[in-house]
Length: 298
Image (tube, rainbow, N blue to C red; front, side, top):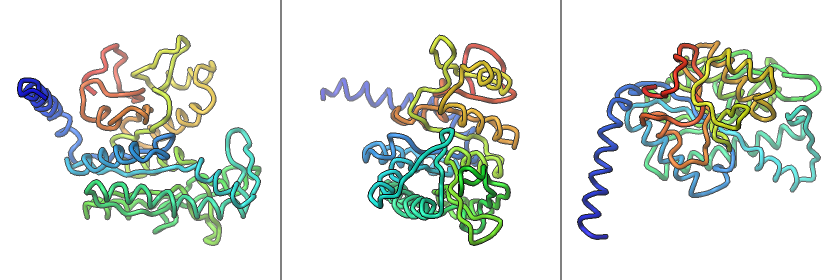
């Protein structure tokens, strides 16, 4: 690379850092819950990039919590073990044999991969599940679904203790029941929303494999109010797999989360773009957000 080109690149980098300063200051000390899932989980490069973003967030004073899914890995293990699996209304029916596999895969294989990725990028991370210190206590969400849980009690002090120690919590969405011998599989978005609400988080970031919530014209809506989200669910504009994410966002806002963003986790540095740049990323849902076209500042 020629020196002149190098100078331009470094100047651009310095300008970017300078422009990020107000946002770095804004989020210093903030709690940000990130639901990590989708295609990025199965790609080593994408996993490393996500881990770097989370480590940087912690380095500049943000308190991130990573909540992850792992559906494809669960499917693979169930197939290997010849355990049949089926879904009702988009949710996995979870019998005793299935929930044991879910716990093994999520708290073991998937959780530790993410922890290791964060450690490899210079961060400190601890993996845990909703069972640890009774972080999440659940009841059955729907008897037809078996051991699929809905959080009814939250104990997030263990997460605050990890924040104080400079450690990034990585949470697998497996929880105990009111009967301690029960184990529940919890939808990853649901778990992330419940944790964000219990922490009164500043942001809940739901990473997906789409650009955000789209209107009838197929355009991503960058700013929304809860009323607008509710209306789009009612008229069918929000449909399919986006419905549970939108409903999670609405519930999290009701429980005190300042704002929820549904964004494309396939975009490089998606979390950093959302938190530390002027334009953000994806669909921002916030009760107090003014209904104006310009998205800045957030």
